[in-house]
Amino acid sequence: MKEKVVLLAHCILNKSSKVKYHGEKNNLERDEKKKQLLKMLVDNNISIVQLPCPEVTCYGVNRWGHVKNQFDTPHFRNHCKKLFSIYLEQIEEYKNNGYEILGIIGIDGSPSCGVNRTCVGKWGGELSSNEELQSVIDSISMSNEEGIFIEEIKKMLEKKHLNINIMGLDENNIEDIYKALL
Image 1 (cartoon, one colour):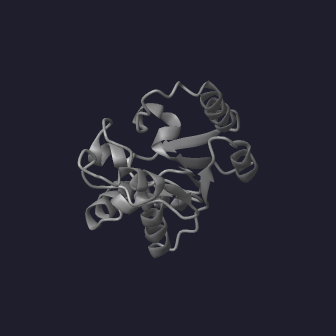
Image 2 (spheres, helix red, strand yellow; image 1 turned 90 degrees about the vertical axis):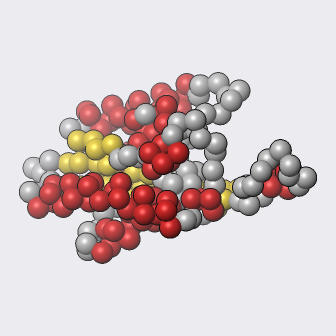
């Protein structure tokens, strides 16, 4: 029987890497569901590789929330490629030695790691002098597209002819990931 490996978006294992939402209470139900996901992986003897967070490594933990449009720059895309390159080598090494890569799990809603949904909008500029701030805020929405890191991961996998399933974790419906992995 092949050993199994899954790669997880950084914030699935480290909630401290997410943008801080001031005033938001810890979502204990969401945290409990993530714990159940991790328990399922461990109970099924599935090895876990934690991907890096390109937002933390580029902007730190005290960053403001961003939308995909802000990350769609040559610098951020190159940053994502550099971060993933060593993980791509690990994937090749595992595959070359008979491991089964079950997939990569991103986090839906993220401007970087979203797989099915990402946050978009006309977010940017100086807040204190923006006379149309409410229209900027109102422009923010979820879009059925991938985040920048996931887009770059897919390109790198395709270039190497690696067919790896990439799944989006909906933090409110984690059960879908169970079905996809088992």
